[in-house]
Length: 87
Image (cartoon, rainbow, N blue to C red):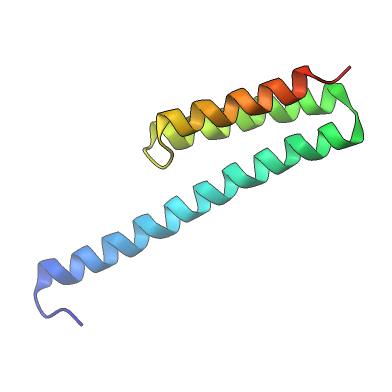
């Protein structure tokens, strides 16, 4: 365990940021799964709505630095292509 006050604070701050980042990453995964679940059911309207929510979640994660901007762009692109392929 750290003895210096600043080191103790860094441990607390790191833990807090880790938990927040983990929650946001989990939210991204959940929103992506919802899009693919809507695609599986064949409901274009639900898939489009889930896509909009997923894009919002992914963009927020990228803006906070939790996802790299290229990773976020790739995820959005693949989801958009999957939804657009629906007939």
